[in-house]
Length: 320
Image (cartoon, rainbow, N blue to C red):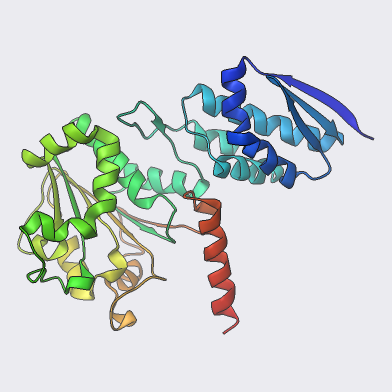
């Protein structure tokens, strides 16, 4: 038996945030609940459908309104993931995910986990001295690690942030590229720069770089160092060799925290079996103080299309 329910929003501003650009969030929900008619009239939502569907959709709008009040930038990923979790009866777990604030960006946006995988990853970094985030592109591994590093720096839990990444394409030598060291490694470290600029603002980020409070360097330059009172992030770790990974992990000094991120399906090394990330997750699986957090396509937050691409490739490789 069909029923009608109306949800009155606070004002047009809230309606714009909840409906999405050109009502894209309403269209996503309509696709998720095809038997429920979802319409907008001014700042009011009108639902017509079965009681169970109305209950689910109402809870999803409650979550979206909460995120909007928290100044969270809402995307279609929030809508789809909220729908998935609520239909699975995991509303309380969803609220626990969205109530966790990792940091505040330079533009004043609250940075929160968006999926259960991200929540486990954030909790692991807070709890453990060494955390591995292993999973596909678009799952927010780098961004969340940088957000936590910025939080620790602002709260004086560490004295500096060190970011590194193997430059596989340049053979870790980088000598033939034009410019000074910073100009040589910039193309490989751009995702880290972008995340840091979002955390601190571009001008403040440049000042921290100039004072060496934030250091961005290729993995080859980590050898022989001991990094104390630092938040250290190794990105694209699937492209480290066994020797490089061991070298990097033994750079850790007192009062430091290390995050290692990578995707073992995107190894660019000539011999995929030599990946330091693949080996490290086996060697360190039972070591105290080490957290290993796997991500799946359900944790992709970049764009809906990224998740579809990952699933398509997974199906293709399974059928080869």
